[in-house]
Length: 144
Image 1 (cartoon, one colour):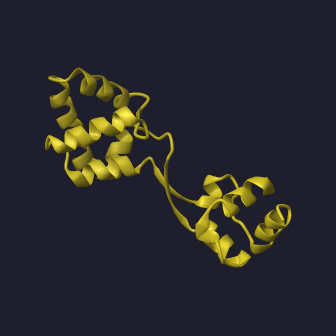
Image 2: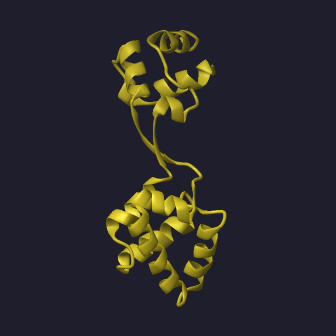
């Protein structure tokens, strides 16, 4: 455990001023941060997330768009094989653009985008896992 890193987080964040060690631990352990993780989405993933019929319709829509748009065409090739990483900025932008153009519903776009979104606590984000009041006290004692 990197107690210095933990103490630095607490001492440089005014939100923790006046809190007890238990309150600080509780606050740091709240899962309220959305992070993106590499998540390859294949045609089977699409059908699993959307349901077989709706997923197939979505893939057919991409095939139609792909006839006019090379980026969509090659993304579809990857969806059919290794998958497309929906945590990637370009892929997320492409899905948002397709939604804005009416090719995808907002709900379907959000469903695909959310496949790469995970909610974590600030403690996890910093690499600590779940923190206890004792861990907070130990970190702060080393900085006193």
